[in-house]
Length: 196
Length: 196
Image (cartoon, rainbow over all chains, first blue to last red):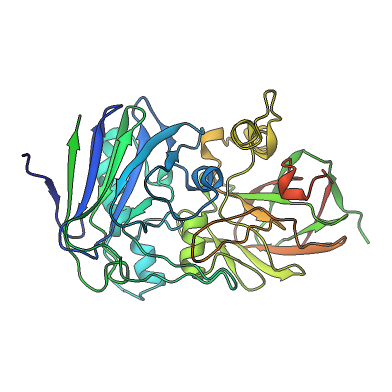
């Protein structure tokens, strides 16, 4: 049994994933969000697209059996297992600006956005190329009548997981999310495993 | 009184908008969608962001008083008037792939995506830089329980309009949408006016 990799609280990593490999994202303590990005390894201008994916799925909540598409309408990742069933694909990674605008912080943390930008820079990904992330375990109910959305505590409990299978050679960005509201008021680590 | 500009059915245009100018998008016949994109004129890597905007608005349906933010969290456009109150900011512009994947077309139209890419190319915008558009008059109800989304006939009637005020010098992309389902089964023109 392999030990999972650990992403410390309020940080992020980037790594490659080969076509056919599986990535398991684990919430080890419960109620912790992990923002996930995927780029085509041979051309990082190709990136996961919420707009394409939600259009093809005809659903805003994705789970086992759903496919994450790129901005070129290629399948990048399949969700092959999911013990939670509630993730967000509407909102961009939290950032200095999120903390400034929503939380009123005067010396804001760089957030998932800054963590992803730093981790992905060696792969040639610039800040402006970071789109809406697939936010594992993030719980954003939408009121269908008013359109109002709220950021609620994740439904994930300790040990819950979501498993993706790569449909292309990818660069992955992954965080332990830095926004208090998204993680029910405390910052916890995220674990991940890669298997062939 | 100025004559409005006309965008013929299933086509698109790009033009500049100066800070402080107002753009009025008009549905002259009713039930016709217009996909709108905005880029910062001095650096087209800065572009409207659904993920930032919906996060700051805490709502998926935007209308008068709401602000469209960029991927750098700057305000690009304010919605200053709106006679409809239902627009979409979840889905990417329809494309060859949309028509292939959703409609099963074997010789698909290039769609709003192709029309926007062609119109915006002279401004230095590449296809991969086209994000989720603000889809004026597009009616995409979301079921808050299941997350299911459906593309329904626009609520706009002949002469309905939405008015934006530019908060920066912008490049705008605008279409008369090419997807049958989005426009209740027929393709109509879109009109627009620019005023200082």
